[in-house]
Length: 148
Image (tube, rainbow, N blue to C red; front, top):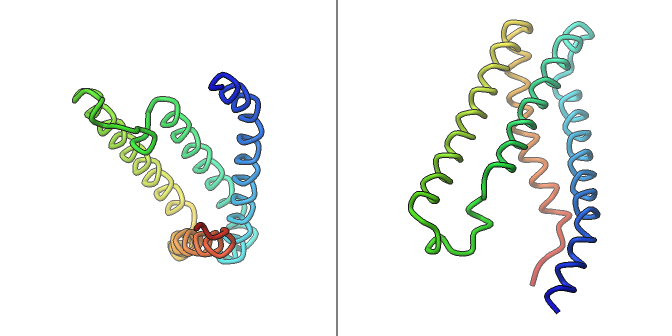
């Protein structure tokens, strides 16, 4: 019986991955639309902003991909008690390194934006990023079916 369940799951995995990819694309399209509206960039500012933004997104995505390939999340672990102290410590250090890498990328692109655009545009971008997160969470919360 387990064999049939595992086999069925393996055949369905590509469909789950495709659905997740589609959702990511929809969110990113919504983010771009949201930023475009909130930033109200001049044509010159847009020519500078969007390539920097795209590079930022690529770097963040690459870091997340490495994280997923090299790490087992605590959320996926059923029992920490079954792990050795070294394994647990490794998970924690890997997570801290990921967060440090994320911060390094944030700083790098902050300085790129700041050196290329007026600081008020940069400020609008950071504010728009935060309000986008809240709006996306609110949107998801309102469209998610209730669980019993």
